[in-house]
Every structure is written in structure tokens, then in C-alpha cells.
Image 1: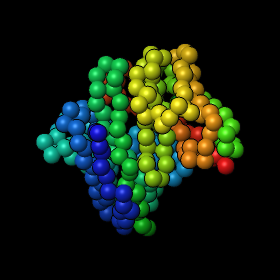
Image 2 (image 1 turned 30 degrees about the vertical axis):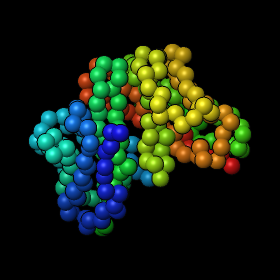
Image 3 (image 1 turned 90 degrees about the vertical axis):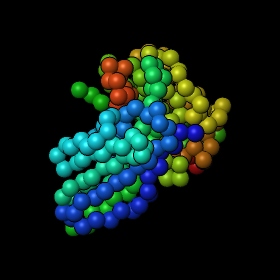
Image 4 (image 1 turned 135 degrees about the horizontal axis):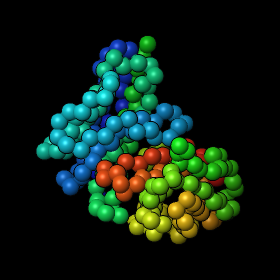
Length: 113
Length: 115
């Protein structure tokens, strides 16, 4: 059973702080890694992807991947109340037509003004 | 560019009734995924298609669930007969083989309540 694990939270941070969201995965053959944001009552929205070890930055967001430790993280700098949402980690694997994502259950982030 | 389109957005039905959910993927995308999301189980993959062919339906909970993709721009997920435990949000997502990472884009979802 391929698993993606996240702390369910809630993770509460003050406005302006750094929020750190973590995810571990069980399958070493995993090839691509995604962070989706889901506001309450809405659908998941892609915010970042990463596929090689190291850091990838996009504005206030930084994704980090460590394949040896099977660990993915998302850092949100200068957190804003509008960042309050559930963050889903997704891991992709397969080949050709048989490529799919496995999602974690998500971490609820609350940014307090 | 239109995103993934799902209908209906909300569905309330009584136990035993047939429910049909519809999805139109992003134009040019050739993979389509049906998910179910609940608080208890999170986002679960039910079935996915590539080039209109079902590739993996191992997530379909039981024979009451069926899915079809008659052409590249339309898919249905049918529940017959429906049960209260089927109440959930059902999402459709699509991707393209040209994206080697397999990025998926989600529709707005159908909120299903079975009484």
C-alpha cells in the first residue's frame, strides 16, 4: 500500500510567521511531488510541484524534497490570513498511461491576524 | 481557457435512487480521474482513464459504482442504488501525457447528499 502521511493539524501560526508543512511517503519509486491548497468548500488548487532533490522557490512558497529521507515539505514565508486552508501533499508515480497521484489527508493551516 | 467542468454542483437524493455525476476535462487533456473526498478518508482515487480507456478501477468501492468515458470530452460516474454512506464530495481531475510530472487539475466538485 503506497502511503502519503501528513500531520492533520491544525497548525496555527501568527500572521507574518513562517509556516512549515511536512509530508512523508512510503514508495521510493515516487517521481513527482505536489502541494495543493484547498480552501473550505472548494476544490484542490495546485500551488507547487518539485521533482528533484533540494529546494524550489516560488514567491513566498518554498518546496523542499529529500528523496533519501522520503520527505517533502512546504514553507510559507510571511504567512497571511488568506493562506488559511488545508494543504494536500500528493506523490506521483507510474509510467506511460499508468501514472497517478496519491494524496495525503492534508494539514489544516490557520494563520492568525 | 475553461477548466474542468462538473455537474451538478450539488445533488440531494434519497437512498436507493440512481445518481449520475458528469465531468468535462480540460480540452486536450487525455487522462481523467474521479476522486471522492470525505473527512474520514480524505481524497480517494476511484477510477482513472487514459485516452478514454479505464486504466485502474481498483478504488471503486463496490459494484454500485460505475464510470464511463465515451469520448475525450465527457465522463460519467454513476451510483446505483445510492446509499447514505455515499455522501461525499466527488471531484473530477484531468491531466495530459505531455506533462511528464502528471500534474492534475481539479474541477469544482459535486457535493452529494444521500438521505
